[in-house]
Image (cartoon, rainbow, N blue to C red; front, side, top):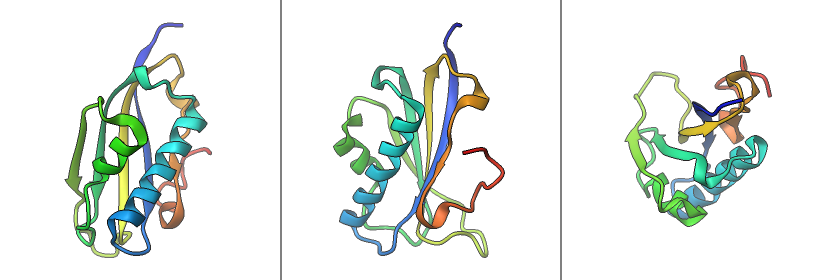
Length: 122
């Protein structure tokens, strides 16, 4: 099977807006995404992070660099400020090349973000 460009989603929440706590949660999220999907670093294309407007202690990409993604294009943006949206939420979209089909990817939602996409298989 040939490789294709795929997108992998994930999200988590933080309990308190500190750079240390964000780093801990982003690294936990990336670790789970990489392990569950058997991601090879060389297959990464780019990573986009978003944070809700109640998060302003640090850039999620800073934690990703500590995770080892310093050579991967990283981008941070602010999530839309939606009424009744999940507070203190960090989302990630990873673009990668993989031989896996779209239905074989495991999107990861941790902590308070677990209910964001309950329509996706685990």
